[in-house]
Length: 491
Image (cartoon, rainbow, N blue to C red; front, side, top):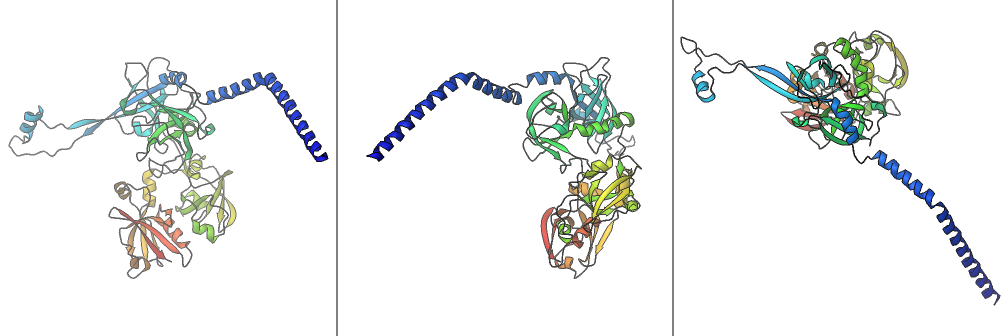
């Protein structure tokens, strides 16, 4: 009986507590409904700001400073002259007159192209891509809602970043796009591209920043200094040189290229990179860069294992040019550069930009790992040689491995152009009965990779092979007669 009374008491107390709590909670909700609605409204407002209902205000402000660029180049034809008559007339003159309306074969024609750009000063300076205006005879600029055509002159260009500065004289003050901070953007931020795709004037597309710091993408070739912003804002032919804008209407990049093998993968040169070189383009017409005289690449796995390194951070030195600043400073092949003038080097792609913008003939401190031990050297970067000089320095470099029984040489530029390659070495000789011979490596083969490391020169190839431990496989990626395949040799 006592248990029954005790249970009933618990039920009554519990029910009473529930109703009291419910009543109190109901009164609290009624008293604070306004505050809750305000909080929800504030959150919705924040979301609205981050994802605008319309980009129209931004576009209206930016559009007048975006320009269309058309270029012309005169192409001369060299047809052989047939002298079949005493009057030295062409036998085909009658044919061309009858079917095409002219008597003589045309001796020249015009090649045209399209691009975009944007105004960066009221007096008519315009930024665009180097590849848009390089090697042309005439540059015509059209402004927004202006029927006039303005002939532009090139002020300066830089092939390594694919940036050009041109100028027009419009005899009036022009609208300008402000330059933003490309380092401040985040992956996922909204962006807008404005340009002249396929000749469709002032086309606007939107997307997000898909990635930042793309250094491995180099549409301009292996010597390009790349640090691209990747975006899914649709970019097409003719967009090159146009602005990539943030939500403040500031330029954060110059649209440079697209990935033809994909959909909506485009790349833009970061505007902070452009800011560094623009003064030189304006003053000198070119960018004067510094040079150490080394070839670099990622740290090979074999080197990590051999020296028990804790990470792959740094730039691995594959070769050093004789009498170069690096050579004079005591930098050697197989060194790993981990810090340059106080700045950490995460990958081999970080170093070229830092070196190229160093003061010429001014000392810099370089921290490196040599056989696992940290040392510091001092170097004085020199003025970078021309591409022709660099080619001469690297041409004729032949390396031989008696163990493998092979000689390899750097790829001549004409082979790289013909095969559409940006790296690789060519087999110059193979010793009969050697490891390479037994594995069917042949003279003329192009070795592109060794154990997943891209091969850029003969010295690098030998260093990677040398660091493969005894008894471990060496896996070669070969290009032969247009076909790619692998050959594996046990060292």
